Amino acid sequence: MLSPRRLCETILLCCLLLACGCREKPAPPAPLDPAGVEIRVGVLSAERILVRMPGRVEIRPLAGGELLYRGELQGTVAAVCSGAGIELGGMVFSGAVRVAPLGDRAGEAGVDFAPGAGPRPQRLPTLYHRAGADFTVTAILDGAEASSYRGALELRADDGMVQAVNALDLQFYLLGVVGAEMPAYFEAEALAAQAIVSRTFALYNLERARSNGQSRVFRATTGFQVYKGFSAEARSTRQAVVETRGQALSWRGALFSSYFHSTCGGRTANANEALGVTAIAPLAGVACGGCAAGSFYRWDSRLASSGLEDVARRYLRKNSPEVALGAIEELEVIERAADGRALYLRLRHSLGSFEWRADSFRLAVEARFPGTVRSTAFTSRKAESGEWVFSGSGFGHGVGLCQVGARGMAREGAGRREILQRYYPGSEWMKVY
Ligand SMILES: [Zn+2]
Image (cartoon, rainbow, N blue to C red):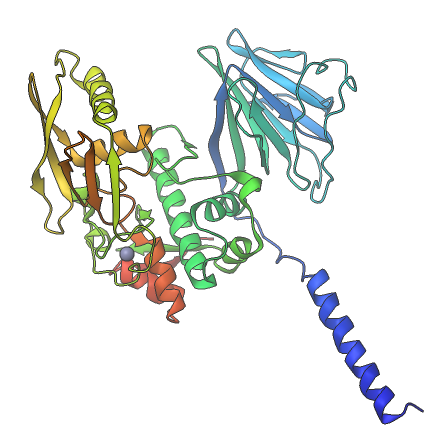
């Protein structure tokens, strides 16, 4: 028999072992049932793309038709254009192709390319493949980091460039969106709200593209919603996608374009004023109250006069090539929305002046000098040094869900429904799959 003291020690030891065991072996992630809706998203465009898809694959024409190849791709292989077709790992196909992994690939270990291992890719650089992903792609020349994805890879030749499109189920697509659009450490209710919003946004735009006969290939950038594939997945964001399976937002019985942004700065924007689209009730703008603690609630920035002139010159070259630009003297907001966001600007320069939509101005500056004009809620002045000084509030276009505000609400104990009701007033819940 154990003495009371030994008994206590034994119990303590057992508790410690259990606690350590829990830390070392977290519960396996919740299973993720597919939605049965295929999403296609453009992930890369380059003259030459490196592809790594371990295991057996099938290659078929993108337009459908009989099998072109079944077997393994030898290590890392290059994809280049071959006329209107694609050359992949030494195989030449006359048109666009879909390369799909065969069988259950989950948990497959990544293997780095060993120089000289295959007949074709001897001079190709190493491509790190993340274990568990179906494939990894990167461009050879632009120094882009390789990214890993789930699902199939479509390759198409477009004017000498290889376009890489990732085709995968909506639920898996959302794993790569929520993890890219919102930090994984945000509260579970904020992540769940983001998952519902991103699902609604994707499904609405898929339906719209179908009915308009437009391309159904989504962009993977902030111009649509950011998607980083398997590389962006995290346990917390996965939980949000699993828990909200099939949940979306509707207005008057139909899905709508559930825009979202980082930080509204106090009040979300009216969709018509900020984006030029119809401001249905859920997108008309509301008081936020949740994002005051965010890093971009208020901001200040500076831009060299040569920087502003560079941005303005590019804009004019594209939109009004007949206008010559002199030295910029004044940047004036000539029209503001009721919430204070700038709508139109006038740039006065030594050779004349021109008007510029404020949202277009913001995107043009941000593309060249990220973090300089984070929103259209700003004022500006020219400092004596000649620099342009901006003061503003918020980050992003301001329409719909304020992500940092959603986090603020979740921290105060609000649930996903309350968060979504705040930012999309009048919207309803819908089960779409
Ligand atoms: Zn806000």
